[in-house]
Image (cartoon, rainbow, N blue to C red; front, side, top):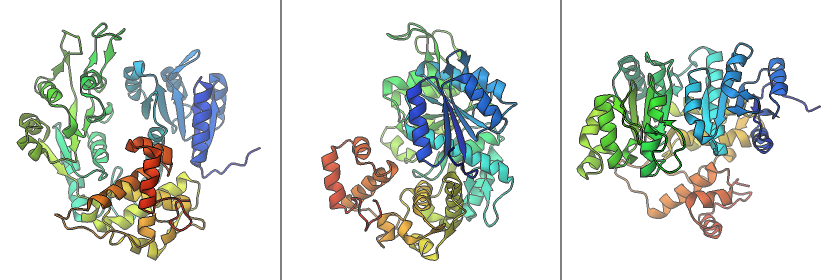
Length: 458
C-alpha cells in the first residue's frame, strides 16, 4: 500500500469520465497532493465518509446523480471539505447558483489545469487561515491580504469603512497587486457576503460574446441558442459582480453597462422582458482610465458611476517593508502544499530581493516563493533556489517612476515570466506567446534562459 503523508492536502476527484479523472489525478499527484479519483458515485461516497478530504472536485452531471444535490447531502458528513464543481458550458448558470448552496467555486469545461490549481490553492489557503483563527504575528492581515506598511493599513481601513456601504467601488493598481483579493474582502465584509461573488474578466471575451456572457440569452436568440441561459449578472443577483480589467470592455458594452447601473434592470440577448438586478459592482483596472477617457476609449459617465469610491493599490516596490512578511506567508503556504516542513529563509536569499523591482508585484513574489520551496532540499530557502536573473546577481534595480525599460529587457522579462508560469514547458510557452517553438528556442538561447545546471532551470 502506498505510504501517505498526513501533512499533504488530500483531494478527491469524482467524475464519470475516466479520462478526466486519470488526467486530474496524475497532474495533482505531481503537484504534491494526496489524490484519489472515482468514476463510481457510490464508491466515492464510501471513501468520503471514511476519510473526508480537504478538497472535493466533482462534476455537476454524474451518472445517476446530480452533483449539487450530492454536495448538499455530503455537507453534514464533510463540513470542512471545499467542493469545487466542474461543469459543461451549458450549465454554468446552474453551477453559479450552486455556490449559494455551499460550493467553494466552479469551473466550466474545458478548463485549463492551471485554473484548477489556482482554485485549489485558494481553497486550501482559506482552510488554513480559518484553522489558524488569528492574525499572524509580526504583520497585519485583512482577509487574504497581508501587509503592515502604512499604505496597506490605510487600505484595510478603507475596506472596513466602505464594505458595509452598498456603493460601487473602483480598484486601481498594476497587475499582480491583489485587486481581486481586495474585491473579495469588500464582498466578504458586506451585507451581501452570503450571496454570490461573481468575477468577470472584461478582456477575456470577444466583443460579440461579452453581452451574452453578462446578460445571458433567450431561446432562439441566435443560431445555437437552443435554450434560455442565465448570464453572470443574473446569477449574481443579491451579491457582488467583480468587473476585472474593466478598461478592456468594448465601448459598445460600456453603454449597455451604464444603462444597467442606472436602471438596475437588463434584457437577456433576444429578450423583451426587463429583469430586475440587485448587485454591487466592484471594478478593477491596471490602466489609466482618465487617459483613456481623453482618448475617447472609455466613457466618462461610466467611470463616474463605477468610482463612487476609489481604492489605489500600491505596487510592491512602494511597500517594500511588506516583502519579508509576504515571503514568509507564501513560503509556509507552499511548504504545506508540497508536504514539506516549515521553511527557513536564508539571509542571502532575502538580501537578493532587496533591490529587485518586482515588475510582477505580489503575484511575482508568490511565484518566486513557490519555485524556491519546490526546489529547496533541506528546508532552507537559499540564493540558488531563486530564478536565474536573481540568483546570478542580475536583479534589476528599482526603477525611477519615469524610467523606461529597453525593449529587449521588456521582451526578456515577458518571455521569462511566461516560461516560468508554464513550468518551463517550451511548447506551452510558445503557444501562449503565439510564436513557433523554434523562435522561442532562439530567444531563450539569446537571453541565456535555456535549462542548464548553471541557471537552475533544469
